[in-house]
Image (cartoon, rainbow over the protein chains, first blue to last red):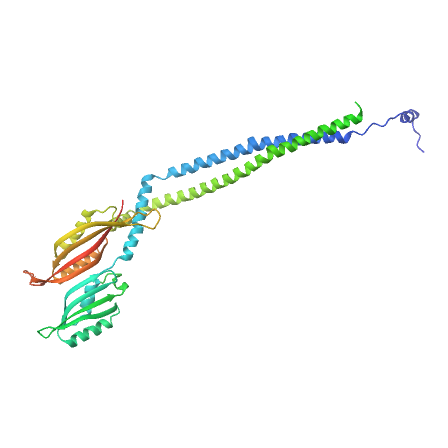
Length: 187
Length: 191
């Protein structure tokens, strides 16, 4: 068995229990630290992060404004003109018709004993009315059959036919051409 | 001071600081956080706007440079569809076509008609000149005149024509003469 020092044993007899106050002081220190930390977080957010965000936003705004100034107003006007011209030219070319093709069509499809005296053309609907003279009624019928089989035409309608004193036949025909007929110029 | 009093005091101080921390959170941190969220959203929008603007500026600069490099194309387009009515050029074109095809012009009127609005954004309106003229000559010259008119550099659209024979013949060639009355449209772009 262990032998204790008699003085220590005596001192042990007079030890008084001290009250346990450790937890409240730790709690106090913790709450102070928490309070200071919350103030620190607030200060950091308010004067650090918010200022950073504001300056970032201002910088971006300035850079955006500077970008707009990079475009020369003269170049801008020229470009708008060029763009408009391209758009408008496309529009104009889409509706461009080559009515000169009518001459080639009539030259190719007309028989030798038939000729024309007048022609009237309207681009709207691709319509042409011709008046002419045929040597005989057979020549006119033959001519009409040529027109009937022409792929360029939608319709060819004989609207008038009259025998002259000379025995020839004057006639009038209304043509309606297909749209693609006027699309490209005939060679 | 008794131990129990010290204990109560320390608990009270701790409670005060805890409440203080909660107050700081509730009245300062929370609203600032909301503001920060809002600012970050705004910053994102500004950043997106900047990026878009930057891309657009780069594209526009590239388009400008392409346009400058395509000087020949611009010139051709400007001849086909000039900016402004440019009636002198229109007259010159008709006159030179007449001269080249040996037909005679009898009358010519040019009238500006109301321009066509454009549906495309930024695109300017399409102006129109209405040409009303009559020419006479042999069949071949008139046919070639019409063809050349329609294939000339400045776009002309013939909307109507009336082709009729003329009673007298050409003295030089004794060729039969015809007259043609033409209504046509010539185009330009508004300035």
